Amino acid sequence: MELSSVSLLSSILNLFRILLFTCLYTFFALDPLLESVRDRIRHRRKCLVGLRTLDLDPKLQNIYGTLAGDDLFIVNEFHQSRGFRKIHLEIAMLGSSLEILHCVFFPDPTFDLPIFGVDIVAGMEGVTAAIVDLSPVGKALPTAIDLKLRELRIPSFTNPRKLPEWGNIFSSYVQFIKPNARSEDSLFLDLVDGFLNVLITCSISSTPDSLDSPLTIERYERQQFYCLQQKRNDKTRQVLAKTFSPHWADEYIDMVLFNCPDDYLN
Image 1 (tube, rainbow, N blue to C red):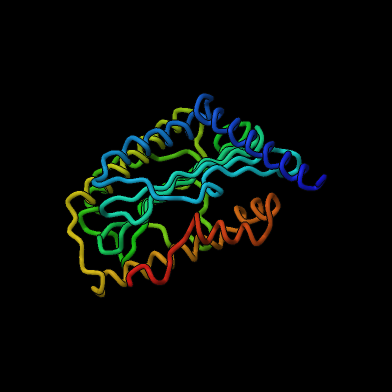
Image 2: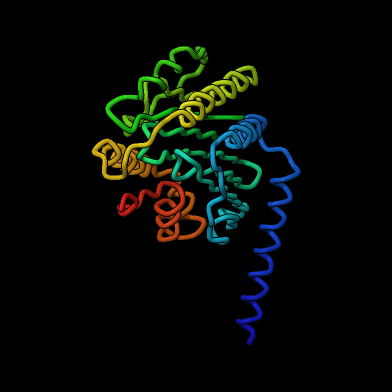
């Protein structure tokens, strides 16, 4: 009976913490760049045809844990639309020392569209890393996408960062930087918006191939490779494994962050 009461009290406290974070997430500011990019993604997302919310296990929507005495909160948003099998926006906060934005638009492989991805990491001294790309799911980016990206103004950022060794999934347009002051935050935001505008505009005019088309199969296999390479980034797994458990971390990465089921085309 005592164990049951303790378990119930723990569940209530966790629920209270999640509700508290939901309020903080809604009404209080994140790092300015994270907040601006999050809002811009939400704004552009509304332009997609047939946008709908994907059902998500409540346990995976608002997540709470602790790491070295700090509260870890994760909030996930999942959508789907014409041209995109999964649109994932995640905000994570670890105490007052770390904020992360992660977003991926996974295209429906019947459409000849790249993968949009953006990640931003901010600490107490501001943004330490920001990356954005439209990653190809074929031998190269679609011609229409490439032509529109050439027309974009790609800033010369002061502090470019080196891509990881598994970064062969990215396009030649990828920008991986540490912004220098808030002026470069604004430039990065404009770049995210430009990439999204190119992608969404092309998705609206794109015509799908059949499920059994060799092009569709090739694009899906490339998505699987993209997910496999992303899973080589062990930093995320280490934090989740320490906060929850190694098994939970693996499931979250496989099912939430980079899921690409083998039977999707069946």
